[in-house]
Length: 80
Image 1: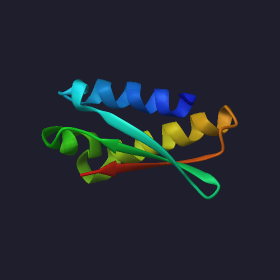
Image 2: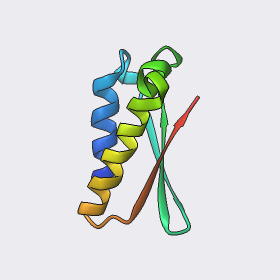
Image 3: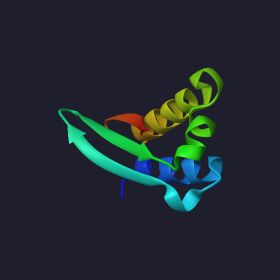
Image 4: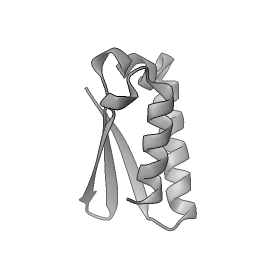
């Protein structure tokens, strides 16, 4: 498992009330890796945050960590 996916899993499970329901899938799309996050519907608002601030912070952290570890471009999608 790439470091960026491990980091996203760790952070997501720390934020939600139902960590056992966190599922993260990785797909290659062109030159980028897309990490798709699926959580319990009750945790969706908590993961996105007010005005999307939490989701934006997750994307920034994972993207910067991937760049530091030379994993290439990583996108984070939060699925409903």
